[in-house]
Image 1 (cartoon, rainbow, N blue to C red):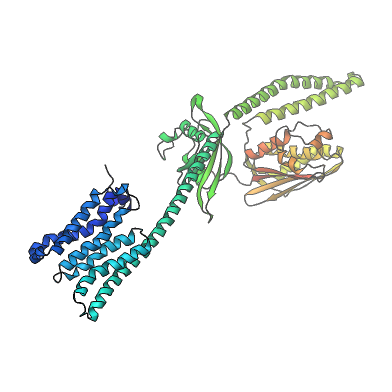
Image 2: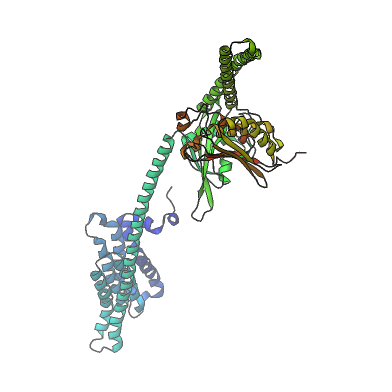
Length: 555
């Protein structure tokens, strides 16, 4: 079905017509007026039916309109159809002069061919000359009939009406020129927009190709959570979680927490957190269920407008199932091996202790060797205990209101002998009491690790100082030493399991690199943080921050 004219636009409709139809449409307004005159003549002016000049004008108009359809204008060069408006001047002249003096106003019909010629794109000089000469020739015959008895009115009429048509022609010419300039400008802008649209589509295809080629899921969302851009990996994630089938707001999307069983509430899902303006990284969730369940690490960054308001977010999904499974297998291996080591080590230590209980019955050389066995067995048992704690993902803490000052005092007392042996000045500057919400056993273990490390990494003597600072909702404990220190790069990695600095290895300082990772685990289980500030040869300061109060009581 053809599109209606009012929807396609007149200009587009006119251009879609053939040349003959276009010529006929241009001639149609004048033909309709002349047809109305021909119909009205027998009733209004019957005397004009006896005037051959008037009738010739009507016949010529009819012939010109028929020629619009009959002549194959599209086959002829140089726009010969412009002969139609030129001949219109003759036809109008016959009508007007044949109808004198009954219808002197018919000369105004000349405006139709003037408009056609002026808007046709004909050479300006030709159209202007015709717009003046044609009306003047129409007005001239009655005046010549009164020659030489001409009046000023006759002369004025001969020139004034053609001048008016010339002005109309000029106005149309200027309007047509302006219109063509606007059309050229619009056409230029249209080409530019089409070029930009083509480039935009090419870039969009390139972006889709790049995004689909990545091994991570990427999604850009607006403030309402509607997807603006997403790649194949992200769509796979949505299919795995049945996101497209979920009932909005009812939590049926299959996104689970770290335990792989508890469904995350809608506000805890990555997209919801992202559109709320949160910026996060390494947020682990489990997608799907059963054997198809996958571990996904998510990260999000907000999208901001120029005025700083939130417009959306970008969320990245990384499948880390293999990494999580490998880490779990590694932890299970370390835990199992450590557990298997403990039994024979405890047996060795127990039997050596029994033998050393009767040290007087042993030769001195045997006694010294047994003490070496005892010391190294205990050291190995401590290392196994550290491995077990490090491999445990369920390191339990039982925080309660605890006086940290007493823990510091106990830790200092335990490390005093080690400090004196290493010629270290061990001091504590902690107010008493110093209350915090902590597990006294675990925080005591963390303090012992920090103080022991501070003494161990100050081989040439020096000072180790424990200080504290309290706020309204937090408590900080700092352990500072004047030892060898570490570089800023090593300080950023010091809490990793099995990490040891080059300086420690060069100095042959014993250790497995597990104490600080265990300490960090203990502090984080309390909801706290631990930091390290150090410099090569400038000592180190480890600061742990703990909550001052526990969660509100539940009723």
